[in-house]
Structure formats: structure tokens, C-alpha cells
Length: 363
Image (cartoon, rainbow, N blue to C red; front, side):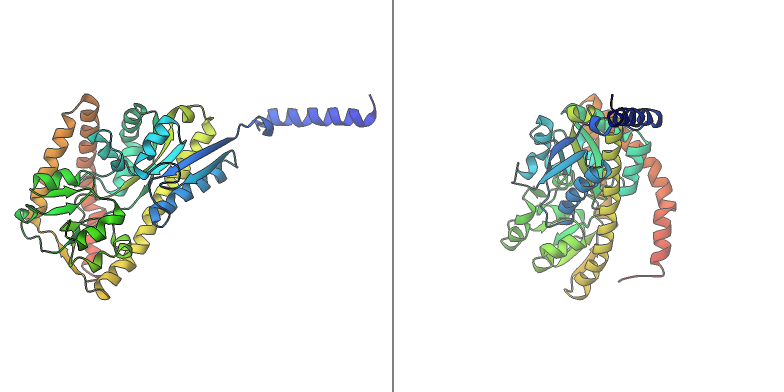
């Protein structure tokens, strides 16, 4: 063997031994993945940009081992078909909110429940309660692995062209409202109208609906609700937080090495907190704009109205729990965790917020 050949062989042996001793993997042994991602949100709103942030984070944290091509609604599948696309393998990963594709009413426990958990209480239930394991159990029936990946935070109660003074004022009202809020509104005598976000403003102009809710001051201002409605109500009893989910084809996910599973977990968790923070920043300025520049009349739902809606919400949750054993297990877990969380939140977060509000006020 010539000297230069000997050096090559020995050098290669040393490098291989070093890799084994340090636990470093062989670069050529690392499998790479190319995934298709579908988003239920368009790219012109914060939630749509979150999907792109998740895709970039996963690619960066995986050092390029997972590369993701993102498809917005209509590019690969329609917005409401995102979950099914990932379930069937048409896409590998998706992002959206589950009341766009509810398969069972209990799905709502992992997005928004009227008078339910706050955005941080949801993280606590999923991360330190049994929320995530129940979510995994539910979605496994659809070949999907779920992650919490975004949140709009607390939402507003909606836009109305008449004041809501009693629960009876909901009777006969036609309102665009999503999630379980639809069922509560119907129990209060209203009519829930399901229309896409892009059609809401025109529906209010043409009196197809009398009222509508969408999200928070930032997105409501962008959509132009201040041009078609007089009264802006709070609180968002129907959606105290709006958890958005990232979901991966379970068969594909189960085949991933553990380090890449951790990459997805941390990329989505980071995205969750980033969206909440972004909405807090944007909605603060937008609320001031709505009140001071557009003379929007802010109204608080009366206590008796909220009490009546809460009773209907309780009935809705009881009906969901009665549907099947898994639904009961999920609802019971959610309600029990809410009971525990409310006790501390009233003293902690809400107590501090009330004390602050006595000193500083926008209104």
C-alpha cells in the first residue's frame, strides 16, 4: 500500500472511531424528509404567517433534515380540507383550528370552549394535566398527531347593530359565530349563520346577518367591522382563547427519530407563544384606533346575560359528554382542570389585572 493510500484509510478510521466515541451520528446516515404542509389560513393574516414560521423553525432546528413546502388554502386543498389531507397522507403536516373540520363535538375541547380555559391555562392542561394524552388518543383515530402551535388569545364578543341588554335580545338574531358558541346562541333563541371570513362584511351590509364575531381588535379593524356595525361587545365568552393546532400524519410522525420529534414539539410550542404575543401587541394599538378614530361604542355584556349564556354552555358540555365514553373522559378532564385553574387565576392573573385597571385605564 502506498503512503498516501495508507493515510486515507487511517484517517477515515480515526474519523469513524471519533464519531462512535462521541456519539455523533454519521452525516450520511441521517435520513432527510421533504414534507408538504397545508394551512387553513391565508397568508395575509397573522395566523397564516404562523404556518410559515413553523415550517421555517422545523427546517432550521432540524438542520435541514426536514424541508417543508407550504401550501396556502386552494393551492393543494381547500382550507377546511386540511385535516383530512394530512390524515390521508395527501399532505404531511398542517396548521389550522379544529372547528374548521370538527369530526366530533368533543374536538372543541382542544380549540375553544365557551367560558373555558385561558390561553395559558390551555398550555397547563395540555402539558401538565392529561390534556395532551387525551388529545393524542382522540386524533389517533384519524391517523393524526396534534400539537398546540398558535393562539389568538382572548377574543371579543362580537359586533352588533343593537344593544344586548337581556338574554332575550338574542332571540331571533342572526349571527355569524363559530365553534361551540353556535350551539349556545341557538339555545338562547338565536340563529347561527356559518359563512367564511371573507364574506362576513358583505353579509352584514346586506342584512344577511344581524351580528358577527371574528377575532380581536387587530383583525376586526383590518376586516372593517367598524364600517358595518355600531356596538363592539366584550368579553368573548364564546372563545376565551382560540388554540390553533399543528398536526402531522401519525404514521409518518411515528417513523421519525426521537430528536426530530422533539424538533416539531419545540417549534410548535415556540410558535404558540409568539402568536399570542404578536396579537397582544397589535390589538392594543388597534383598540385605541377603533375607539378614538372610528368612534366605536364599546359595550360589556350585562352580568345576567353572561349568566344565562353560561347556563346554556353548561348544557352543551353535558350533551357532548353524553355522546360516548372518550368524549366524557375528555370533557370531565377539561371541566375538572378548569375548576382548579379558576381558583388560582381569580387571585393571581385576574387579581393583578383588576388592581392594575383601577389605576390605568384606556376608557
